[in-house]
Amino acid sequence: MARKVNKITKDFSQELQDLIGETKNPGILGKIIEIGLQKIMELERDAHIGAESYERTGSRKTYRNGYKPRRLNTRVGSITLQIPQTRDGEFYPSILERYQRSEKALVIALAEAYVNGVSTRKMKKITEELLGKEFSSMTISRYAEELDAELNAWRDRPLKEEYVYVITDARYDKCRVGAQIIDVAIFTAIGIDSQGYRRILSLDVSWGENNTSWEEFIGDLKARGLKGVRLFISDDHPGIKHAIKKHFPGTPWQRCQRHFLVNAMDKVPKRYRDRVHDELTEVWSSNTWEQAKGRLEGMAERWSGAFEEFSNFISEEGWETLTVYKTCPREHRKKLRTSNIMERVNQEFKRRGRVVRIFPNPQSCIRLYGAIAKEWDEDWISGRRYMEMEPLWIWEKENAPKEEEHAPLPSDTSLNVKNLIVA
Image (cartoon, rainbow, N blue to C red; front, side):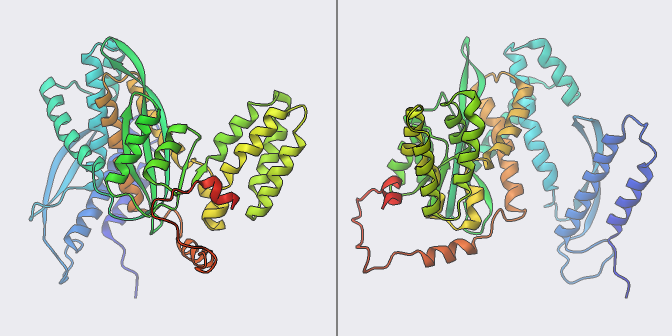
């Protein structure tokens, strides 16, 4: 029996084939995006209905009800879409919702910058190029209210599931506050849940990184229900360590190896940096805690004497980069030994923030990045697992302390990761 091929998929392939040979057409990219979005919406409507066109099935939920035309302004020009409708009136393409959310945030940020007189001529040009039209103050105000309500609800949502690994980081953007332009910190936390999926747990803006701002950020995660954390991963900012110790006492912390490497190479003359890189790479490629500890101690010993300060840095702080050996299985260490998981998100923030250049106020900053973060979160939870969690459950069972060897800890005891590792 011949395999049944979805008609929409066949049409999609045919339309793309028809575009071949039209590469001289300046609107070719816009046409490809238009066809792709249209077919994705069609397939999503089929899934909502529970049946393809003219298909008879008992699982059908509703029926098709034509299309509603809609023009969409994109970076490659204005495209025309036919938005699929259903009789129950409950269907709206999710891909269009996600696209509109971040584009709406960009519209608001640019418009606010224009209204506030920040690089007026440049902002006007960017708005015309990206959006293809001007927006009234009433439209901007309505968009802002709708988007803020949606994003604030998402940022304040309860964290009902366990998140076994949590990665935190901060980056900076320029923001206008009164008559001044200052750097504001954008805090982000990514969690990996017990099923192995990545989630963006929180995003907030503060005036800078200090004990108070990090304490509030981590404290908010706890207040919203964050639990089950086996390991925090971040750079060496003292505010992060202080906040973790206060709100999640006893939870191990892994110092990002990439940040540590940069710090280490800055402590020796330039001609020695390749050697430092190679030696630390060897330490971190160890198979066991004992092997890594031995290599780290040997490295500190070799650099003593002429580089006593660097040697002390390696011996006193290098252990902070080895926490993964004590807290997670080998299969997870490569993804948890650094905060690189944050880099792709921060790169996207940087790319989109570069268009605005100077945010007119902190709210516009959190609005744009919140919209982007929500899109990433939705894509991650509906995509592939970031890691398989079965190795962790096996590792924890094999390494669980025996009752006769370890007396129970008092409820108010606060463990320090360094003490845990040294023990």
